Picture 1 (spheres, one colour):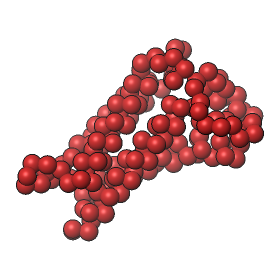
Picture 2: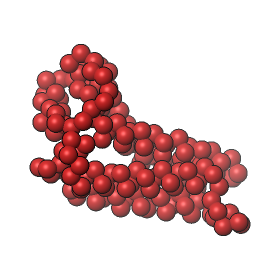
Picture 3: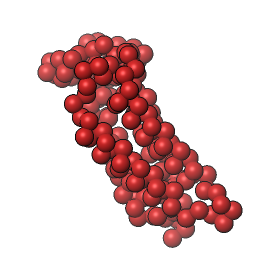
Length: 155
């Protein structure tokens, strides 16, 4: 709930702000052509998923704004699942390498995107778009963990 002064406690405010930033960032990079940042001139093949993710983010952000403890935990788990997908699809292949099929996939979809991380052998390099996306998801998880710690400690 919004506290008596009409403001959100710091952790909740941070969590809501990071969730809004992540939602805006995702929708921009999925729909607005930004040259080598996202290279979507041929589409991305997941337009329906992008709309569903955006709607889910709005609902989770609202739940955090309201401070509903158990639904916030559910939202945290959704973001944790998304982080798991980022780790398994970008970060493990970057550090450990990927199969030839995976390398062809990355080259097809992300070969022309901007990358600022150093190469590790012939491993796929996370592009800048997904590196920032992963960082935003991490910020959402950290701030949300703070909210949940406070919410369940007060219970």
